[in-house]
Image (cartoon, rainbow, N blue to C red; front, side, top):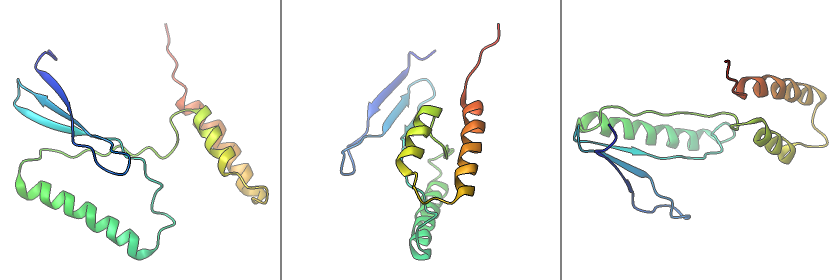
Length: 124
C-alpha cells in the first residue's frame, strides 16, 4: 500500500537550516508537505505583531484557495508538552520564587490533570 510513497527533504530554511518533508504519492499523483513548527505563542506580543501574524496566515489560506492546487491545510496545535516529564522540566525552568500562591496551586492542579490525560494505557 505504501510502495508508491516517496518522502523527500525539502530545501533548507531558517537559521538552523531545517527542512520540511515533501511526500509524493505515485498512485494518487498527489504531493503533501509536512513540517513541525515550535512557536512561543502570540499572547504576549503587541497588537501590531499579532496583526502581522494574522495577515500572514490569511495570506497563506488565500493563496491556497485561489490557486486550487491545495486540497486541505491542517494545523495541529499542541499547547502543552508531550509528556509529564517534559512539562515538569518546562515548569521548573520557568517557575519564579515570587510567583503568586494561586499560580502555584493552578500549576499543581494542571500537572495532575495533564499527566493523567497524557498517559497512554492499554487494556487487555
